[in-house]
Amino acid sequence: MLRWCALCTSLLAAACAAGPAVQMPGAIEAGNSADVMTDAFAWSPARAIDWSDFRGRPNMASTAAAMTAYSITSEARCDEGRFRFRVESYFLPARSWVKSAHLLERASDRTLQHERTHFDLSEVQARRARLGLAALESPCELPNEVRDRLVAPYLAGDAEVQARYDRETIHGTHGFRQAEWDARVRAWLLELPR
Image 1: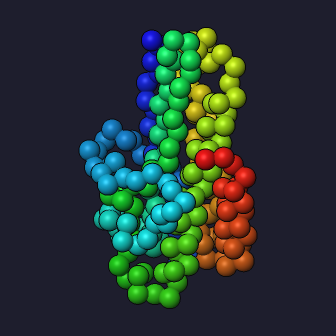
Image 2: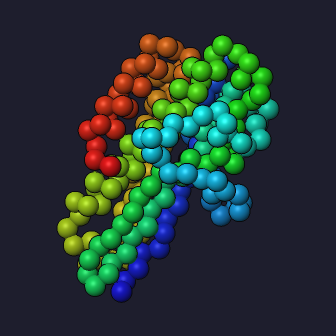
Image 3: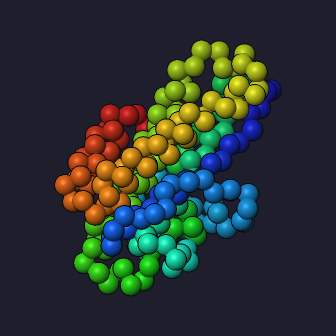
């Protein structure tokens, strides 16, 4: 049995109700803290994230009102020449935060929708990765170092689309553009198989 090690990459997405956030999506090291996957839960169409899921300590130095942390994880193996894999997007409550003062503002609901779409976008990219992996011909014949990098382009694509989403919606503060992105992401979720 040939095994491919688990790959875990965590990404952050920022939103700011008061104006554009300076912080852009970026990688965090999963191995740096034991709490990264504490209370993590996989994306599900039946469970939208809510402010009560944001349990991390807010970064008061940030201009962002909230931060969604998620992890796209993948693992794969070759069992008797058969390629088996799994790619999932997990919400990370211990790393996600919202400033308490923001919860009292009228913009709070708008910011929450923006954060939900960040998490939905991560699921879109996980689905694209699953489709790409399923379409591979003879992946078990690839060298280990090549197989270890199969998901990397999808993770890079996630970082790019998350940054574009924040730019175009001005971190959720542009209502019309936010509505366009919400509809676009919903359509992608309907088009892409789970």
